[in-house]
Length: 169
Image (cartoon, rainbow, N blue to C red; front, side):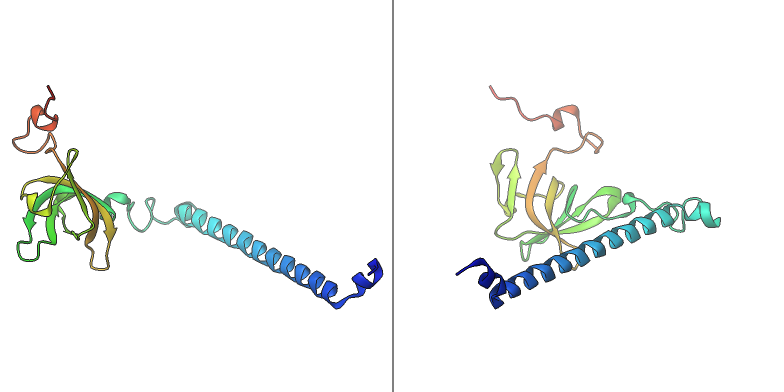
């Protein structure tokens, strides 16, 4: 087979056509991405400068909403205030700003106190814990890891010795 017959073959023509079509499609997607990024950047800058451009409120219409108004969805630190004694699969903790959160526990949840693994039944009301997991559609945290912590120094009755681990001899 010589080069001229190869270049005239239908398979070669379809391959060239397919490669060209693929490159055109990639170019269209790249242009779409470029335009989308530019529009998003413009929208962000527009909302950031609304008060300068149109004389709106200085802090914006949301009054300076920041992350302190949002609930910690993936993890929380707080004090256990209630343990579900019926199902033994959930408890309620009082977190930042006295917000109560439900923490769900399943068989795959790891519960630790210092270096030791403990069971759900070892948790007590008034324990301080850090729960890390995923939020569900009910606003509860499905815990993957729970770590029992010493009480924070600002809690009633806490002393400096409460936050230090026991000495090893």
